[in-house]
Length: 583
Image (cartoon, rainbow, N blue to C red):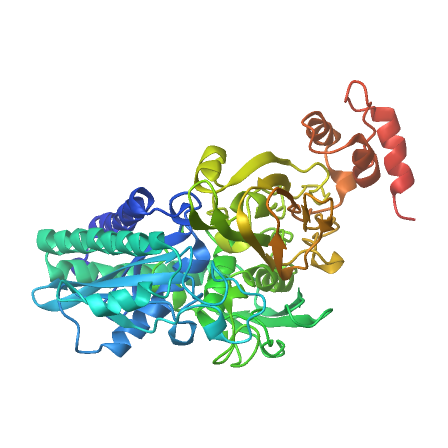
């Protein structure tokens, strides 16, 4: 390939067009899926991949899913090598052949031009149910994959445009909710949009031109990534983080340890020293962990970097098989996506000394609950993940407060809360309260993002609450950076009609009597920098907005705010800060 054979303007247009196709695929899912997990929370991604599975473009509604599509795509390619035809459609969710989570079901469609595969169109979405012992897929009691979900290794579900009816029937006979079948149909529809868009590109510009410029985009992406990595000082850094409670052994703690080396525009991450996989579902498959690494690193780099195959070339990862971040068969792993929280903490802690101006303080570690039971008003089973309740705050950055109510780091703000009215339409729940939680943000020169408090009345029958998450232990609070304070803790409690208050563990299964009130506090993010260096006027503004109490302003920031006027008393503030200075 010579420079004279390339048109940089066309390459830029091609890059944008490929991205636009994935976005159009995403809009198709938003408008045609039936589960609120997909059409409201947007827990899905779409992507286009080359004939060997190279990343062309992705829509990254949920980043932890985005970079986990490629390993699954390559698993399908390997399984059906030489036996792929126009009109074929494949399903996949298996964590032991490139999947990131059993609930996240991927659909792949080959794109043929002139009799050969030129690309793959793919969608991946979190299904409301995919079989297993617990409705909704999260099972804190699981010790092996079969207790979590139906495994779908690379599977041809449509052959040459003909639905394999017997296979289709077998699959959905093992799923509790009829809407899952409709959502898979919607995902298949999304791949049709991708196929059409890529085929039109080839027809308009020709295969040789398109593929030559795709290679150029890969090379350009690699060059830009190497330049970004070269801005990180060369050296070796170590970071650690702890995962608390595996769902089976009270007080269990599991270490994540990463050694990061940056040199010559490349980065290496080695997880030697990370604890072995657990007996429960607190494990991650490789695809989920690799995706967590990429989304965390990309947070620290130029946000305009293209997310294509080229940016992966300078990144080298070693995760020992059999550790908590690369669990071996037949381990339970549904908690794997959620492990991105403590996993990212380890990476941030490692790189903070190298690039403190880029690394954020800790994000709130998610504590979530799936509620499943019978809807007495509609006479049918329902499954709901309470997304609006689990979204805590992000960590602060140098020069920037954390984001309030943004949610877990593995979604990077992409996971949306349910609309209040639609929540009450789709479930027998009644929302009583949903508001920012005062004093939840970690104090700092730049404060963390706030968490939220939520109350719901549960009006279903035979309701089970499945709790999965972290952040209830003191050490699991979102960590502060460079003198910043940690965020607040997570907590879930259920008050029954009999007056009993049930406080589940962070991985638990509980019965919820009809008429119970669910209460959750999602914690805030960690602060960045010494809180006594925060501009007093910003502290007062937060007090006027009800985000911080006057007591916390004095205690955490050394800012004296008049309780009546909520104005800063500058003289008292100066005196208070002098008294709080370390000796």
